[in-house]
Length: 478
Image (cartoon, rainbow, N blue to C red; front, side, top):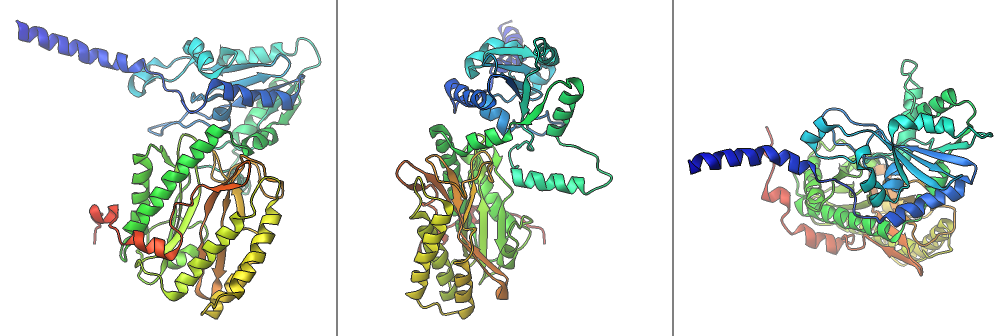
């Protein structure tokens, strides 16, 4: 009898587990409601008291793809619910989120998603003023016109970023679609603008992207902490790839070693597709195939970072496949490392990228004149590198090529960007560079990736260690 009771009790407990598991809501813990409210207040200030801002979330996903919120929607709310809209009413200074209702069938298999039924919890978590059903959005927008004139409507018109996306690459993708006469797709942003103007012709629709770009350029303390952690993980992954590099190892095996480090440290995946290029593959700046075997005597270049809680990094290193720098390779590596240091030295609030580049080029000209570079082809490439203006690169944050530019403007505390010294040697189809993460502080600059080996002696020491690829080698088919 007791045995039968235990069996029945166990069955009941098992049946109740899905219901218990469903009670857990998933919501970010990296930002306080006050920080989201502060961001929304900046939008109110930008649009004025006669306008409304509408920000749409990312679309839902099909199949077994894990949903990831758009950077903009997450930046202003922290919510990860698809098919949602955030409305910031500049006239009343109120923030309302319009959400779909709960999908109980889906939640039984995937877990809870914050929905309309969680309105009280959502206002507490996000600091938003109201939560409404998505079916009321058009009705509320129509009601906003009862007292003319109709308010201005601001909405982001730049392509939405989700995970591995960056604005520049998304725009290139849109241009490729536009070039295809049989592809009539328009962007999600264009669709929303068209729908607003078709349904509400009284509205004048303006672009909110410039306002949001300027906001995202300056990172808060909590954002800097997330980028710093993403940089730490990126650096650990590159170090593990250095350990795992041996002649005969494939590029994709280094990719696998790095991804293990990403996931073992809490990242949800990659911030962008890895660049792992052996030999002449590095000549292609964004080589992504990772199919080739690494050959002794050549370099391997690796550029990779994780998607960590909606923030990423951008770190690059180059090292010899056999673990030992030749004299020529050593001189190339020492040059780009010295150039990196020269670029960091002038960085502080108030200076511009042009001033940084000029000061670094002047310093490196003296550096070159004080050293003997044995290979005349390499010396020529180094001198050409002094003329290049791309060593001071792009902003980094929620995207690897983040919105907002730190070039051509006076630097401010909270700006994060890459310092990326590089040279090309066309005679040998060789491309040499390293890349580090700079954050401007109140008094100067911090190199967040300084711990990642870049000098030949440091790299050689790391490469003497055994890597994860050697501990658990892949079982390649012949």
